[in-house]
Length: 383
Image (cartoon, rainbow, N blue to C red; front, top):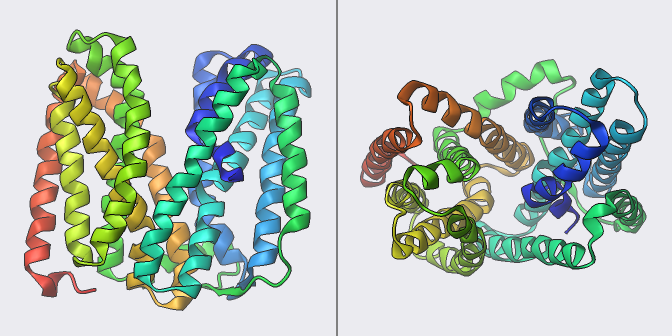
């Protein structure tokens, strides 16, 4: 549940208050968010490696919560503790690194590693359903904060969250298990870790990162796609709630389906859902298609949530699972961070977002055919 504070909804809600109290231009504020995300993506697997060949989950959780707290304190530093734009910018980068690195990366990594150490991949698939249901907690908290008009008093909200995290540090159970990992003495040695992963894992990780890339890129520019199709913004922005609810509905179904199909076919269904979402994105001019767009994204995210648990527990040995989860989550966060920027670059090339959407639809369709080929050729994708 604390991970919810590192998710995009809270970052979005916090942004106006942050901007008003830092006096940074929009470009520097956005750049600090991007750099913080990139640092978080790279630091998650490095952090797991530096914990040692075997590490205590109790110690790991406590360290992560302390990093989380330092992220909140960095925002206070940016708003009240510096007089120059440079130092303010640096504090913001550290703040986003702390919140995104813990909320998006380290906490999910530790939870996934804990589950994989105790249960097989089929039971881990069901953990994805519990995970997404807990994420709905963020929506309820945002609703309560909005109803209480708390967004004008974010300094008190942040202070309360720091207090809650301190309680988490004290309340972590002392007898949590130890997790096996890859022992890397310094960040420089981390480059050798990637060579140890089999093709099936790397391929699946890339497909999941592709979903993160497009999901963030599309949602960041969804208003542009809507305006180019003469769709009212108040109508298109309502799609976020049904996407969340459909993801919550479809995730248990995807967990159940995993018990009856092989992993490569689950990867194919995930990329097929992405192609479906790309195609519907180009035809948002009817209410029915907007609902289909929500369904396609709900399916894609449901498969992504299940794969985030089972890909590692199914393919990798015990000694690689912690670094596997951290690499999977870190690489996905990296692609998510650059998604909006790459979409903007393609816009500069094509001149409009509809052409960008058509290009992405064709590209992802080719990827889907490749995945289908691998599904029909088991020897090429052995798990």
